[in-house]
Picture 1 (cartoon, rainbow, N blue to C red):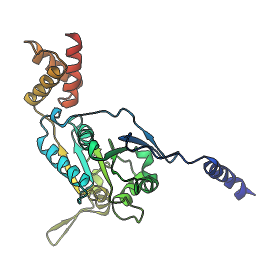
Picture 2 (picture 1 turned 120 degrees about the vertical axis):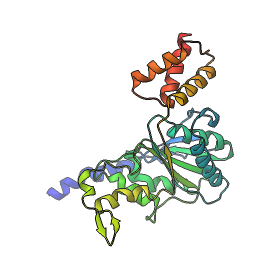
Picture 3 (picture 1 turned 180 degrees about the vertical axis):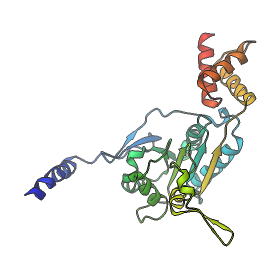
Picture 4 (picture 1 turned 90 degrees about the horizontal axis):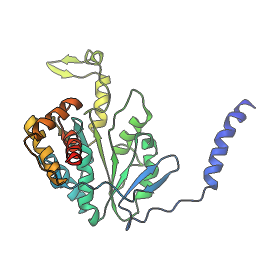
Length: 278
């Protein structure tokens, strides 16, 4: 009786899902981006996705070239890699993904936003996208894992190793501030061995790098210097119709000191504030 009582809630949830009518797939001719709802197993259209132009992303020319080339190959039906964009915060990782989507959306590229809670249900998403007739980027933003999170192994399997992996019309683009996506501890480095003069990392380190290794393309972003930060602030101020007078640089530097960072995001936020005050 105890086992039956424990099973009843699960049976009720299953019956509720069976009673729920299937939700129609988005009309991809009209919808260019969607959000994956893992709990409902459905795709929710994003009717007004944020649009970013590649020309507005300054000081990351190499990163733009690599991600743009990979995406162009993918949209053309050629082999392409899953992409991991890592590095300093606010330097354009997420914006670059949005920008290449905006560029290639007219050619049939669609963007699917998935949060970390939705990673275990990736096979269900892949099933829905396999025969959709479009090219899809599954976008996972700001990805990090704590120890033993279930989504970690789910993403590993989705990238490489699962029979239920994505079809040829799906790639995964992820952003993270960490290259290896998990916290690393000093004690784990003590497992490293010297075998015949060669360094062999311990099992804990090998496990943590095994996920990032499954992304075929790594794109790194770095902190910017003061001159680059100011150039980006001027660019955005001009784009917003504001002029940069004699007090502009001083105000921009004070703003960055208050935020504790110099990056593209901080420059954009300052430019908006400057333009509004003008």
